[in-house]
Length: 105
Length: 483
Image (cartoon, rainbow over the protein chains, first blue to last red):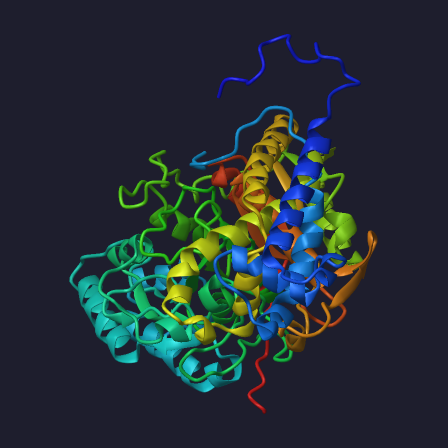
């Protein structure tokens, strides 16, 4: 894949005025999660804990299936473990690399 | 009949006797079936035993040998396959109630190749549901598959029946699949030899997918040579699997007796050993020293992007299966899944598309790390499981995740069991599990040998040299049938 930057163009903008890719990724992920939770929740009390039952039920609606309280309780431990692993992945700050799509070595 | 129990023979040993007509395929098949009858109730490794069909096929194979039509070293060898491989005319349940009556009308490519080589199919083996969930026999609800070394210990998964059946000598070899360690974890827990080949080396046609971009099929055996023999038969181009490589298949047995002098072994600086229990880490280091004494060199290697490996594996192995299983969920079959899979499909809903894409990007960096490392070394040693087989009750989804104390700290058993195999799946490199010792509790400890893409031959060569220098592979469990 061709780079999205012209060779040599990187770093020509004012470094102080731009956000790093990591900041952008983190902020956009936070925004996405927040809007998903807000859209899925009717009450205002749900906002404090993203893993509250209410928030998780609300967010599940956006994924195509509204989870029952039992199902939320059944998967919470698994979700917490997964999110902990994803935290590290979300720090990944690649320079320029396209994803593997057809993984054939 | 040979003096020893024929069920204990390796494929190579049994094959020589079959060829010489000192052992017949019918005798060998009957010996395995009798052993399954007497000991499988304690182990629970089979979902389906094909007694009549196996004996009929054995008679055909015997007749062929008698009339001079010898197919090769797998002629008359009884095997079994994980119940994720389609077999013509049998149930293929994937260990799930959802598919308990699913009769497949064709053979997976690898099953067809083994049959053509003369193998006799003894049956279909237990597995974690859809290669991911709880280990349940969908017909009996019997739970779980037990480790032949200690019936209160786990076999791990997802190729649980394959690991247990080979370890318990219920078959000469088995096939498993590996998306995040499902061949190497049960091989490590059971002290057998299991190969996750290079991604694309073995066809997955007729194998129910778990995560398309990580799935592999591979052999599980009693010895390195048996494993090399089996891979040589099942590997190779298959137009029915678009990801299957058309690179020529090497003769993996050819270099097995070659010396390892001058061969370079890498021990990763980071990621693996400090997240394994002390006995496992010591056994892996000792394995490297064993080959160093034979003239190999040992050097540390750096794989810096592995710090993202578990997160990347989770993003992919949650995202891709949820997409596949949407069809069953939409059909209202959610309640038929095991509790673990219910939790996994539901938790997967909170993994974002960006997480999935980042995971697939991380893979390129991890592949590059391996390629750089392989400029300095020929193979990389790591633990296959990082821990001895855990108590069975720790496999059940409970309120707390079981913990283990390792040099890196007090961490979850789940993380250790994802951590050790994931790099092999993400990078797509060949990775072989084999025994490298026993714990104080008498349970096998596992070594993992990883190689360059499509260089299974070097992995086998190193593994064979280690196997010949040690006797771990000669030990067999004594299976107690007492309740």
